Length: 467
Image 1 (cartoon, rainbow, N blue to C red):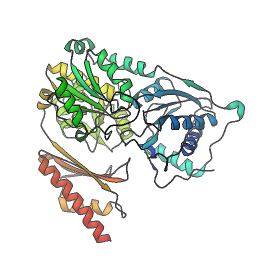
Image 2: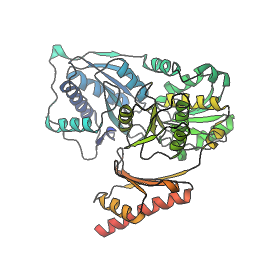
Image 3: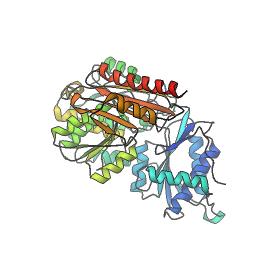
Image 4: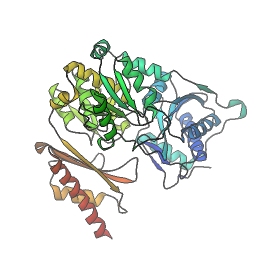
């Protein structure tokens, strides 16, 4: 029978995600994976083509990855299982292994009680809105086509994906690996007990770093909110100070986002990850840069130095990746610490980002504080509130009329921009949680906070008016 998705299951370009047990069960995961295998065949994949399967370290991962494998095998797709790996490792293996697609069992930065299936094509890029929309329609209208006993898929394990990922990063022409090794940086590392423990220490050690770590176990018992925001990196800052590290690096559970802590132990915000990584790339290969609508203006400042232009896409990794393809951009990513280097692959990649940051510090021959001080300083304020019953269109109208922006962008929710004043506001429904996100940036925190507070008051006022 067609699958009726539970109302409390979130489905979109960020995958199909929910809380373990309700609504996400092994039965549902198996059915979704079987449907995806049939969907890939309907899109041209041959029966027996390989789907690459990996997971982060969540405690529900072994259960769900087995359920997903069973579903794929039942419709005649071969399964290549990678085990606990970073999402960028999974996607690189899929593209280089000429797979028909990939399934990542990971809820990324969500708390431990969440899990998800993140779906990608054979190109190693997550499904975009159009293709994901077709898959969701397929779920509602079609049954998976089960294979007969003699045409079931085969299963094999691939234990070498992480090593190949490391080799690709260390082989990038824009990295001076020997120069980084000579620097002998002392780096504090927080992998929040996610999949990062399987790749980040090895990468840093091969780059000549002395690593002092926390959360390097891969048991999924996250000791804190796993999203690598500045507010969640207090303990990493303490580790930096206690161990005399030159900087601190933090990744999320599936290792596609990187956040930074400077040598004083101060978290510097996720937006600077992309800005500094882009500086490394643009210094060697100037060209277009792509990011999303919620990314700091400091990226524009970095691009301007090398005569490059920043293009903005809707929030969501696949939206940025497709725009990179379209424009032939040399670097891109998102302000949440996600860096995409098309010379490697078209997905956010925290190990790659870490290597680019270290290269940037070697290029400048100074610490992270000095590297950051070269650029204008902005303050970002982020908040989230439950989605109102009446939707957001009335709020968007109120904001446009009430705030008088210089520029308006409606690609993804509503972004209001005052470039001459160095401030902007972005309001959008989240793709990963049932919330509305308010993101504002200005040259000082008071001005950014005022934008968020104004938008929130307008939302509350509109809800009372509608009620």
